[in-house]
Amino acid sequence: MGEIRPILTFATQGGEFSYHAVAATKAAGGLTVAINEKEEFGDVVRASRSMFPGLGVIAISTVAGTVDASAKEIVRKRPSALPPIVGRVDVPVELALIGAQPQSIESVARRGVRCLAQKPAAQQCAPFLREQLPWIKLQYRGESTRAIKEVVQRSDPNYVAIGPSFAAEPLGGVIIGPRQINPVGSITSFYVLQRDPRQQILPVQPDKTSKRTVISLGHPEGEGEFTKTLEIARMLGVGVARFIPFDIGDFTKHNSGLRRGGGIFELNQDLYDEQVTEWCARVNGLPANDGVEGAFTTKRLGGYDWYPEESLDLQNLAATFDTAA
Image: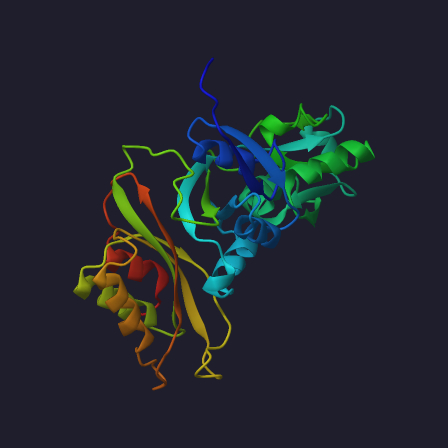
């Protein structure tokens, strides 16, 4: 008898024809995958913390920027309410305009046509929509494949959806116009969430040899604050591999009048390296430009292995995200 291979069940915000399912399959490294579909990102987080399935994927960034709904789940919740991040997968994304019946782009480029789309998907396709379909009316939906299903059920030429091109035929839809309406080369990044990071559930991939730590880090809003945060990282030798900006925008526990900026950092360090601990401590003590001091709350969200690559140039990063640099 052959070897019985385990089936990994992932909670995802989207069904078997979603890019979330593609991300889960990629994370599984060749093992069989079952999809436990959830309505919202918060449902995925809760299911990833539960005994079943205890595993999930959540989209965090696209070519158009942060996926706000999932970033809020990661940034604004207490760490104890979140499952640890144990991996990241990057998935090429090809989005299409999908209808219930064959049409041309010209036939939908008119007033009265409604396009159902998940907001991050619509944001990726904004240049195409502005140029080709300036009169189309967007109606946001929670997930792309559900938008396709609704359009197919309506069977109305006045309704189209934006969704994965590979999902059109299996869900009964038809691609209208080009097969890809988001920018060529678009990548969506997904974090893998797991109830117990001590268990080796995902297959080991030997070429992923570089340790990564994922943290949510807030800093005071204002000119030069982000630069100060990165200067401390550079001084301590903390290697920033990736930064996903996100406006935390709430108030600190200690200073009710102070707003924060911030984002999600991926570091070329292990989760408990002393440099990471020291960086977090020093950022939490930074005085803001208005003289108010921290704390600014840093959360460690997990650690995983990744392919070796260079750290970001922190001066260039500061110049990109800080108006004072």
